[in-house]
Length: 220
Image (cartoon, rainbow, N blue to C red; front, side):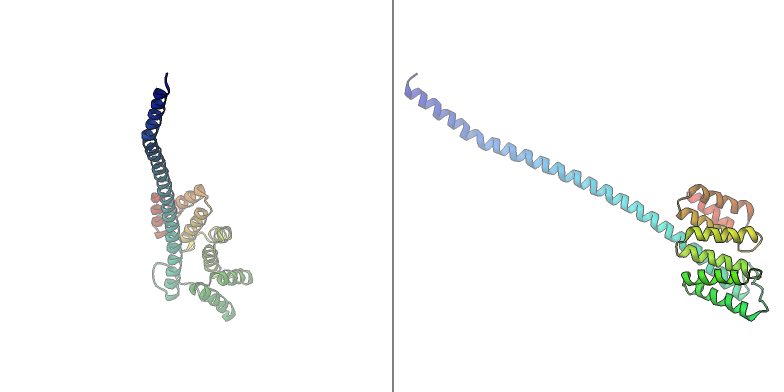
């Protein structure tokens, strides 16, 4: 093969390389673009999934907060009805000892003001100082409600169980069980939560507490 032919072949080879290189570069760039696009799509899917999970968690938090507001609003409504002597429950008997009555009223005022930590302590002190008082059932009820409000769920259950066990016929016993159910829900004791709601329906049929219990069971 002469030099001229060799030179022509070399030149032709370089020409092929020269013309193919831009095409190869374009293909590589296209592949990179596709890979980047796939990565972006994957990231977007992950972000959507994360956002969806956050929405579910927020909805659950809202449901829990609504439950807390419902329980506390019901407690305050009942107390206001009690103090006014109206509604479907009987006003607590006024005690003869002004010191005893004042201790109860002071503790209850703390609850009505939303100072739940202080009301829990004051109501516990009241039942300790006046264990035979006719106001003990109500004091236990609002102590339990106070402890629920400050997220002392186990303390609330203990207090309200004492109230229901000792005073099962008290007008607020059904509501006390509703708060107990709420405590179990917060502690993720779902079986106890449902069991308590069913207990309300069975033990206090036809009461507003039983109606609320049925509604909550239907929600779960």
